[in-house]
Structure formats: C-alpha cells, structure tokens
Length: 304
Image (cartoon, rainbow, N blue to C red; front, side):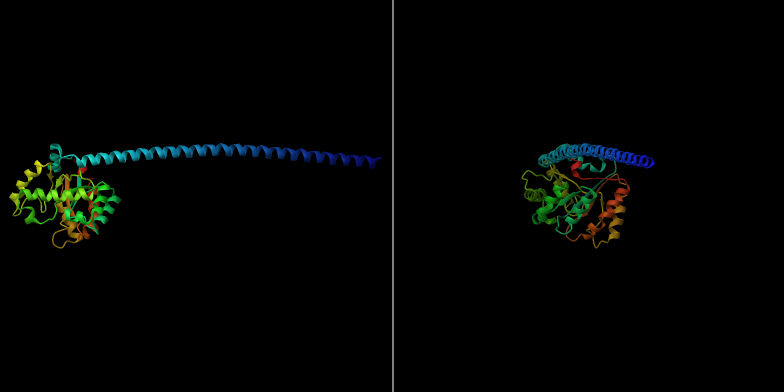
C-alpha cells in the first residue's frame, strides 16, 4: 500500500508542475502579446507625430521660403524703381551733405576705376563673405569690357556709381558740356551692361576729384550743369593712397589711419583696377579697422 501511495503522490506532483509550467508559459505569452501590441501602437503614434512634424516643418519651410522670395522680389522692384527715378532735390542734398548726415559712425567703402577681371571679383568675394555692400565708381570703358562683373556687383546689392568714361582729364574738362557728356557716356554703358535702359547711376565722381588742379574752374562750373540734370557728385574724405606712387601694405594702412582720424562719417577712396592687388590684400585689415572702431558699413542706396 505504501508503494501505491508514493506513486500516486509523485504523479500528482508531476501534474501540478506541468500545470504550473503551462500557466506560467501562458502568462508569459500573454505578456509578450500585450507588449507587442503596445509597441505597435506606440510606434504608430510616434510615426504619425513625426510625419506631422515633418509636414509642419515642410509647411513652415515653404511658408518662410515664400516670404523670403516675396521680400526679395519686393526689394528688387524697389531697387529698380530707385535706379530709374530721377534724383530728387532731397536725395541730391543727402549726397552733398553725406559727411554730416549720420548720427552714428558710418563708413562708405568706395572703389574707383573698375571693374577689372582680376581684382574686382576678389573684392566682391570678400565683401560677400563679410556681408558688406560697397559703392563702385566704374569707368565706362571697363564696363564695356566686363559687363558680367558689373551685373554681379549690382545683383549682390552694391551701388554702381559713375566715374566717367575715359579718365582722360584734358578731354573731360575741356568745358562743362564735356563733363556732362563724360557722365552720359558711362551711364549709357551701364544701361547696356545691366540690360536696363532706365538705369540712372545718378552719382558722379570727378576723375581726380571735384576740386583743385588746373581744371578747377571748369569742374566748379560743371557742378551746376550736373545738378540741372539731376546728377550729384561725390568725392571722399579719407583714402588709402593705393593708387599713388608705389604703395605697400604698410603705407596703405598708415594712410587709412591718418586720413580717417576721428571722423564720424567716412567716404573711403580705394581702387579696383587691374593693378590693385594690394587693395584686395589689405581690405580685410581695412574692414577690421572700422569694425573695431564701431563703424557701420553702408552704400549709397542707404542715402538715396
């Protein structure tokens, strides 16, 4: 009898263990199924959120792009209007009084005698990198040679002003009419280069400056004729002497410091003709000099 009891007891234990294992496995399977279902719905939820976020981002990007495009188009339209509208008396006076018109320290970087195919693009690259817009007083003859560079400077927001056509003093200053003609010839070259028959450069820089020299009286008389034709003239009040003698980097920076002094508004004369590699090489230091002194960089669009 004892053997039978033991045998039955062992059989019952086996059944219990088997049942426990089955129950345990069932519970584990149930948990795994619940976890799997949970992961499915969680993943689906985050996928939807991610998709919505991406769509929202795309919508926001498209929206911002449309605003930027619209702004650029408006700016371009305003610029074209500015360029084709005759110079008003107020704008003329703004140019003539530029040295005393700003309550803050302001510098206008200006480059004469270009464009050139080797120096001007380098200067444009640097100005773009530094996010500075300058003013280029171009020669009509060089505009005819390099219209694509004029277009680039214009498209990048630089002001394209007028430095006459030939830079030949005897021809330009023969009389007042020849001064006006010098401006008009250059202006015509700009119309062609920019493919804009309505373009008016409006600002003339006398070759050699508007005062002094043996043509002083003719230059002075020419100012009245220019004004009658809605044309302002602009000289400079600081310079690097990059076109005088045989300059060096040291002499360029020395002249910069000496001629700027403590001026509130600076119209700086530099050159971008084909031989002025030193102008480009010292330009980073020129820019750093003005930034350290707290100057804001502007061009003539800011005055007109």
